[in-house]
Length: 305
Image (cartoon, rainbow, N blue to C red; front, side, top):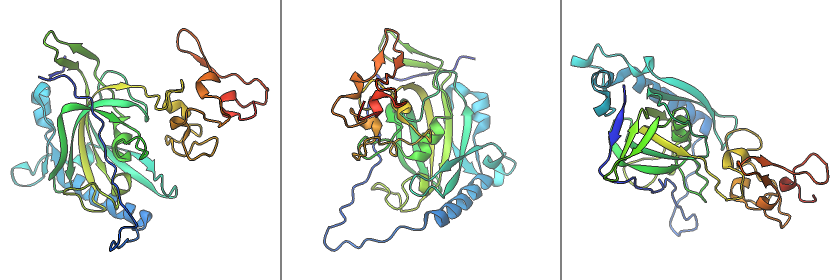
Protein backbone atom coordinates (compact mmCIF):
# COMPACT_ATOMS: atom_id res chain seq x y z
CA UNK A 1 0.00 0.00 0.00
CA UNK A 2 1.25 3.49 -0.82
CA UNK A 3 1.15 5.69 2.26
CA UNK A 4 0.96 9.39 1.42
CA UNK A 5 0.71 12.66 3.24
CA UNK A 6 0.13 16.04 1.59
CA UNK A 7 0.59 19.48 3.11
CA UNK A 8 -0.93 22.71 1.86
CA UNK A 9 2.29 24.57 2.56
CA UNK A 10 5.89 24.02 1.60
CA UNK A 11 8.02 22.56 4.38
CA UNK A 12 8.78 25.12 7.02
CA UNK A 13 12.53 24.86 7.53
CA UNK A 14 13.04 25.86 11.13
CA UNK A 15 15.22 24.52 13.89
CA UNK A 16 13.58 23.05 16.98
CA UNK A 17 15.28 24.74 19.91
CA UNK A 18 15.00 23.13 23.30
CA UNK A 19 17.72 24.87 25.29
CA UNK A 20 17.09 26.99 28.37
CA UNK A 21 19.10 29.93 29.72
CA UNK A 22 19.74 30.37 33.41
CA UNK A 23 21.75 33.23 34.87
CA UNK A 24 23.30 31.83 38.01
CA UNK A 25 24.55 35.21 39.24
CA UNK A 26 21.13 36.89 39.29
CA UNK A 27 20.53 38.43 42.72
CA UNK A 28 17.86 36.69 44.73
CA UNK A 29 18.04 33.45 42.75
CA UNK A 30 18.43 30.32 44.84
CA UNK A 31 20.27 27.52 43.07
CA UNK A 32 18.88 24.12 44.02
CA UNK A 33 21.34 21.26 43.48
CA UNK A 34 20.10 18.74 40.90
CA UNK A 35 18.80 15.38 41.98
CA UNK A 36 21.02 12.32 41.84
CA UNK A 37 20.83 11.14 38.23
CA UNK A 38 20.95 7.45 39.11
CA UNK A 39 18.12 7.67 41.61
CA UNK A 40 16.10 9.80 39.21
CA UNK A 41 16.59 7.23 36.43
CA UNK A 42 15.04 4.52 38.63
CA UNK A 43 12.05 6.72 39.49
CA UNK A 44 11.58 7.72 35.85
CA UNK A 45 11.61 4.13 34.58
CA UNK A 46 8.98 3.08 37.13
CA UNK A 47 6.72 5.99 36.13
CA UNK A 48 7.08 5.26 32.42
CA UNK A 49 6.49 1.53 32.82
CA UNK A 50 3.35 2.20 34.85
CA UNK A 51 2.08 4.37 31.99
CA UNK A 52 2.91 1.70 29.41
CA UNK A 53 1.08 -0.95 31.43
CA UNK A 54 -2.09 1.13 31.79
CA UNK A 55 -2.36 2.83 28.37
CA UNK A 56 -2.78 1.84 24.74
CA UNK A 57 -2.51 3.56 21.38
CA UNK A 58 -5.17 3.60 18.66
CA UNK A 59 -3.71 0.74 16.67
CA UNK A 60 -7.14 -0.20 15.33
CA UNK A 61 -7.45 3.25 13.69
CA UNK A 62 -4.11 2.73 11.99
CA UNK A 63 -5.11 -0.72 10.74
CA UNK A 64 -8.38 0.67 9.37
CA UNK A 65 -7.03 3.81 7.66
CA UNK A 66 -3.24 4.30 7.83
CA UNK A 67 -3.33 7.19 5.36
CA UNK A 68 -5.39 9.34 7.73
CA UNK A 69 -4.04 8.01 11.01
CA UNK A 70 -3.11 10.28 13.94
CA UNK A 71 -1.34 8.62 16.86
CA UNK A 72 -3.29 8.91 20.13
CA UNK A 73 -2.98 7.39 23.61
CA UNK A 74 -5.70 6.54 26.12
CA UNK A 75 -6.23 4.69 29.40
CA UNK A 76 -7.13 1.00 29.44
CA UNK A 77 -10.45 1.14 31.28
CA UNK A 78 -14.20 0.89 30.68
CA UNK A 79 -14.94 0.36 26.99
CA UNK A 80 -11.18 0.11 26.40
CA UNK A 81 -10.55 -2.54 29.04
CA UNK A 82 -9.65 -5.18 26.44
CA UNK A 83 -7.09 -3.08 24.55
CA UNK A 84 -3.50 -4.27 24.22
CA UNK A 85 -1.25 -2.30 26.60
CA UNK A 86 1.69 -0.36 25.23
CA UNK A 87 4.12 -2.39 27.33
CA UNK A 88 3.36 -5.34 25.02
CA UNK A 89 3.97 -3.30 21.86
CA UNK A 90 7.01 -1.12 22.55
CA UNK A 91 10.67 -1.79 21.85
CA UNK A 92 13.53 -0.56 24.02
CA UNK A 93 17.22 0.30 23.89
CA UNK A 94 19.86 1.11 26.48
CA UNK A 95 21.09 4.73 26.39
CA UNK A 96 23.98 6.04 28.46
CA UNK A 97 23.68 9.28 30.41
CA UNK A 98 26.16 11.77 28.92
CA UNK A 99 26.52 13.63 32.24
CA UNK A 100 27.16 10.53 34.38
CA UNK A 101 28.37 7.56 32.35
CA UNK A 102 27.59 5.20 35.24
CA UNK A 103 23.87 5.80 34.65
CA UNK A 104 22.05 3.98 31.85
CA UNK A 105 18.43 4.32 30.79
CA UNK A 106 16.00 1.86 29.26
CA UNK A 107 14.44 4.00 26.55
CA UNK A 108 11.06 2.72 25.37
CA UNK A 109 9.79 3.59 21.90
CA UNK A 110 6.76 2.58 19.84
CA UNK A 111 7.32 1.62 16.21
CA UNK A 112 3.99 2.12 14.45
CA UNK A 113 5.63 2.09 11.00
CA UNK A 114 9.33 1.75 10.24
CA UNK A 115 9.36 3.78 7.02
CA UNK A 116 10.94 2.67 3.78
CA UNK A 117 13.55 5.35 3.08
CA UNK A 118 16.87 6.37 4.58
CA UNK A 119 17.65 5.99 8.28
CA UNK A 120 19.31 9.10 9.80
CA UNK A 121 22.62 9.13 11.63
CA UNK A 122 22.60 10.43 15.20
CA UNK A 123 24.05 13.78 14.06
CA UNK A 124 21.92 14.45 10.97
CA UNK A 125 19.15 16.90 10.14
CA UNK A 126 15.65 15.45 9.77
CA UNK A 127 12.26 16.67 8.60
CA UNK A 128 9.47 15.78 11.04
CA UNK A 129 6.12 16.60 12.48
CA UNK A 130 5.78 15.95 16.22
CA UNK A 131 3.85 16.51 19.41
CA UNK A 132 5.12 16.49 22.97
CA UNK A 133 2.99 15.47 25.93
CA UNK A 134 3.28 15.02 29.65
CA UNK A 135 2.55 11.65 31.21
CA UNK A 136 -1.02 12.84 31.90
CA UNK A 137 -1.26 13.36 28.10
CA UNK A 138 -1.48 17.16 28.31
CA UNK A 139 0.05 18.69 25.16
CA UNK A 140 3.00 21.07 25.71
CA UNK A 141 4.48 21.38 22.22
CA UNK A 142 3.62 20.34 18.66
CA UNK A 143 3.95 21.07 14.97
CA UNK A 144 1.62 19.70 12.29
CA UNK A 145 3.74 21.44 9.66
CA UNK A 146 7.03 19.61 8.99
CA UNK A 147 10.01 21.20 10.74
CA UNK A 148 13.72 20.62 10.43
CA UNK A 149 15.32 18.94 13.44
CA UNK A 150 19.00 19.15 14.29
CA UNK A 151 19.54 15.80 16.02
CA UNK A 152 22.52 17.14 17.99
CA UNK A 153 22.08 19.54 20.91
CA UNK A 154 25.32 21.09 22.13
CA UNK A 155 24.06 24.46 23.32
CA UNK A 156 26.07 26.01 20.47
CA UNK A 157 24.03 24.28 17.78
CA UNK A 158 20.58 23.89 19.35
CA UNK A 159 18.99 20.55 18.69
CA UNK A 160 16.51 18.13 20.17
CA UNK A 161 16.69 16.30 23.49
CA UNK A 162 18.73 13.09 23.57
CA UNK A 163 15.77 10.78 24.20
CA UNK A 164 13.98 11.98 21.08
CA UNK A 165 17.19 11.84 19.06
CA UNK A 166 17.84 8.25 20.13
CA UNK A 167 14.33 7.20 19.08
CA UNK A 168 14.27 8.95 15.70
CA UNK A 169 17.47 7.21 14.58
CA UNK A 170 15.65 3.86 14.92
CA UNK A 171 13.26 4.84 12.09
CA UNK A 172 13.46 5.46 8.35
CA UNK A 173 12.15 8.38 6.36
CA UNK A 174 9.80 8.24 3.39
CA UNK A 175 10.42 5.94 0.47
CA UNK A 176 9.83 8.87 -1.89
CA UNK A 177 9.16 12.60 -1.65
CA UNK A 178 7.15 14.05 -4.53
CA UNK A 179 6.85 17.75 -5.31
CA UNK A 180 3.36 18.37 -6.64
CA UNK A 181 2.54 20.98 -9.35
CA UNK A 182 1.07 23.28 -6.68
CA UNK A 183 4.29 23.21 -4.66
CA UNK A 184 3.02 20.89 -1.93
CA UNK A 185 4.89 17.71 -0.99
CA UNK A 186 3.73 14.13 -0.86
CA UNK A 187 5.61 11.62 1.31
CA UNK A 188 5.24 7.91 0.71
CA UNK A 189 5.76 5.24 3.39
CA UNK A 190 7.33 7.48 6.06
CA UNK A 191 8.18 6.44 9.62
CA UNK A 192 5.69 6.85 12.47
CA UNK A 193 6.55 6.38 16.12
CA UNK A 194 6.59 7.62 19.68
CA UNK A 195 9.11 7.63 22.52
CA UNK A 196 8.66 7.72 26.29
CA UNK A 197 11.50 9.81 27.64
CA UNK A 198 12.90 9.78 31.20
CA UNK A 199 13.89 13.21 32.47
CA UNK A 200 17.59 12.33 32.33
CA UNK A 201 17.30 12.01 28.54
CA UNK A 202 15.00 15.01 28.40
CA UNK A 203 15.00 18.32 30.23
CA UNK A 204 15.96 17.06 33.74
CA UNK A 205 15.96 20.05 36.16
CA UNK A 206 15.79 22.79 33.48
CA UNK A 207 12.64 22.34 31.36
CA UNK A 208 11.71 25.06 28.86
CA UNK A 209 9.18 27.64 29.96
CA UNK A 210 5.58 26.48 29.83
CA UNK A 211 3.71 23.56 31.34
CA UNK A 212 6.75 21.39 32.11
CA UNK A 213 8.12 20.91 35.61
CA UNK A 214 11.64 19.84 36.54
CA UNK A 215 12.13 16.05 36.29
CA UNK A 216 9.00 15.46 34.22
CA UNK A 217 8.95 12.41 31.98
CA UNK A 218 7.64 13.28 28.51
CA UNK A 219 6.17 11.55 25.46
CA UNK A 220 7.01 12.57 21.91
CA UNK A 221 5.07 11.25 18.92
CA UNK A 222 6.59 11.92 15.51
CA UNK A 223 6.47 11.31 11.79
CA UNK A 224 9.86 11.07 10.05
CA UNK A 225 9.82 12.19 6.41
CA UNK A 226 13.46 12.65 5.40
CA UNK A 227 17.00 13.18 6.63
CA UNK A 228 20.11 15.04 5.52
CA UNK A 229 23.67 14.12 6.48
CA UNK A 230 25.10 17.05 8.46
CA UNK A 231 28.56 18.64 8.37
CA UNK A 232 28.07 21.21 11.13
CA UNK A 233 31.43 22.95 10.71
CA UNK A 234 31.63 22.60 6.90
CA UNK A 235 35.12 21.10 7.14
CA UNK A 236 34.46 18.33 4.60
CA UNK A 237 34.03 15.59 7.21
CA UNK A 238 30.41 14.76 7.98
CA UNK A 239 29.55 15.08 11.64
CA UNK A 240 28.88 11.43 12.44
CA UNK A 241 32.41 10.59 11.24
CA UNK A 242 33.81 13.03 13.80
CA UNK A 243 32.66 10.70 16.58
CA UNK A 244 36.18 9.35 17.09
CA UNK A 245 35.39 7.14 20.09
CA UNK A 246 32.25 5.73 18.49
CA UNK A 247 29.97 6.40 21.45
CA UNK A 248 27.29 8.29 19.52
CA UNK A 249 28.08 11.51 21.35
CA UNK A 250 30.09 14.33 19.76
CA UNK A 251 30.95 16.72 22.58
CA UNK A 252 33.68 14.47 24.03
CA UNK A 253 35.69 14.44 20.78
CA UNK A 254 37.97 17.50 21.00
CA UNK A 255 41.38 16.67 19.53
CA UNK A 256 43.08 20.01 20.18
CA UNK A 257 41.48 20.54 23.60
CA UNK A 258 40.27 24.03 22.76
CA UNK A 259 36.80 23.44 24.21
CA UNK A 260 35.27 23.19 20.76
CA UNK A 261 34.27 19.66 19.74
CA UNK A 262 35.68 18.46 16.42
CA UNK A 263 32.30 18.50 14.69
CA UNK A 264 32.11 22.25 15.38
CA UNK A 265 35.83 22.96 14.91
CA UNK A 266 37.06 23.82 11.40
CA UNK A 267 40.65 23.19 12.58
CA UNK A 268 40.42 19.94 14.52
CA UNK A 269 44.08 19.68 15.53
CA UNK A 270 44.65 23.41 16.17
CA UNK A 271 47.70 23.64 13.90
CA UNK A 272 46.46 26.73 12.09
CA UNK A 273 45.62 24.86 8.91
CA UNK A 274 41.92 24.19 8.32
CA UNK A 275 40.77 20.57 8.33
CA UNK A 276 39.34 20.85 4.82
CA UNK A 277 42.88 21.45 3.50
CA UNK A 278 44.28 18.41 5.36
CA UNK A 279 41.95 15.87 3.76
CA UNK A 280 41.50 14.82 0.13
CA UNK A 281 38.09 14.46 -1.52
CA UNK A 282 37.72 12.87 -4.97
CA UNK A 283 35.10 13.66 -7.59
CA UNK A 284 32.71 11.09 -6.12
CA UNK A 285 32.93 12.61 -2.65
CA UNK A 286 35.16 9.86 -1.23
CA UNK A 287 37.52 11.11 1.49
CA UNK A 288 41.09 10.01 2.16
CA UNK A 289 43.14 11.14 5.13
CA UNK A 290 46.81 11.85 4.35
CA UNK A 291 49.47 11.12 7.00
CA UNK A 292 52.55 12.93 5.71
CA UNK A 293 54.84 12.10 8.64
CA UNK A 294 53.78 8.43 8.76
CA UNK A 295 53.09 8.41 12.48
CA UNK A 296 49.71 6.72 12.13
CA UNK A 297 47.77 9.90 12.91
CA UNK A 298 45.98 11.55 9.97
CA UNK A 299 47.14 15.08 9.29
CA UNK A 300 43.85 16.70 10.23
CA UNK A 301 44.23 15.30 13.77
CA UNK A 302 48.00 15.72 14.01
CA UNK A 303 49.20 19.17 15.09
CA UNK A 304 52.85 18.42 14.14
CA UNK A 305 52.24 16.76 10.79
